[in-house]
Length: 582
Image (cartoon, rainbow, N blue to C red; front, side, top):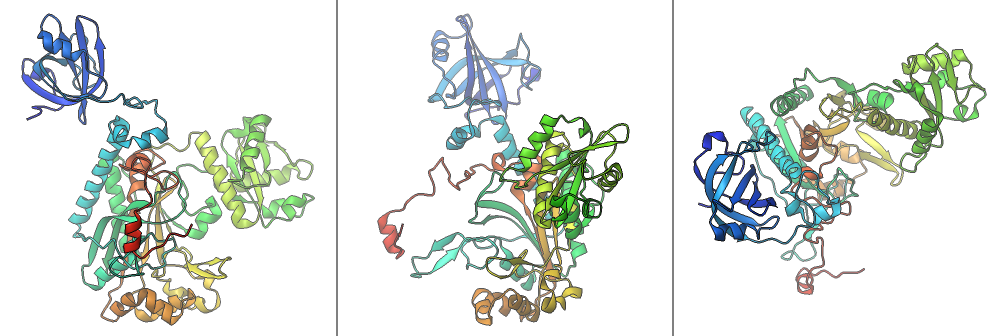
């Protein structure tokens, strides 16, 4: 055996025990007559001591050659440590080494393997196998494992069955570009990597599996951000003979279970919020409700005065920022410049200081009197000592701009505590959204989402007002899961394809296999998929997902460690009957 114990388990109860350890050299401290080495493995650090008066000379001299990240094996005796370290579990002991074996030498790493490293993100991604040795990344991966195990335990206890579905599938329109895979055996034809197992989980319900789940890789060829990867992992679930409330209760329970088991946090029943309310009150469909700053629509009190900017706007809307009434003009100007950045896109911003004496001071004082500004304060919920920030313009665009400002201010004010968890359900999404570029409606979720039964008649006359039997779970301002009740009968599915602009031939070519299955007794069914990467990151107190993925890709979709994607051999291209035209 290379080791009798790991580097995190020895303590005072092991004193005088003969042990064998193996791991990496974290650091060494050579005092001439004494040499200390910190030995590290996945489980912790144990201090080794090489003493000129007690260690065999060849072993003592060999210890002086050790460099950072050398892989070594040692044998020795556990002894009491003189200068104890209460910050680590092994801090009361050290190993008086009698035998040393260098298993592998190592180049000096390009960054320090410490919790606080000197390596930038690019270099750490290139040498990701070294970055994983650092506690923050290692512990993030271990935490991800715990989340996945708790998910499997919870769902298995409720009679869910984990079923694997194929990775090489048929390309179907699901909202993003597919990654495609050429087929050598079927010349000129391609598989697609699944954006989700959507059609397969519906087929499993037709097959009578009743409760399915899978922790599964999904693929979308779309522009990337810090919290988005071309390949990501879903907790994918589907149930038969259920209505929306059944699904919400099951997965509310799963989230509550994860918060309790992994964070020690108890959460009561999750609030429900309609999509329309979320957009009007917070400016987006995944509101962070850990703090207030709800929108107040001011058209009634801001228009038809003498201020042309507001008079010409579709929407005038503001938020009250708690305690910001003492902002200096320099701070206000900096925020105005912040909302004017291209990423936000506002043309300007109006402010109102709510003074402690009950009066108001505004950048538009010449157009509005104290009664007007008092109505603004009442509508936004502003109190003495607060600041009101107001934006105006096209309704949807302005809400999005104010939402971005709300989140930025909350971050600056420390209102987004990662140890506070505020989940909610957003329900009643629109079934369809109009795409100006193509000039037609597209499914807001996917083509299999069921409309609300009472809204089906509106498909003919007001398709944009039809609500979907769909729902998203939101946690701390992030969508961590979403799903819907599915269409389970051929007639309704054909109707949906019609309003999405599919011809009968196109629908059959794309989804004929599913439509055929519906003719053999498809049960009512619905489901939900959690984004595991984002869920783990939020539970782990982080906003981005990369450190919770073993080998992530950068913002260009590249794996800089293995240099992928890359060109392939001409012979392979010929076998696949593919020509590159750049």
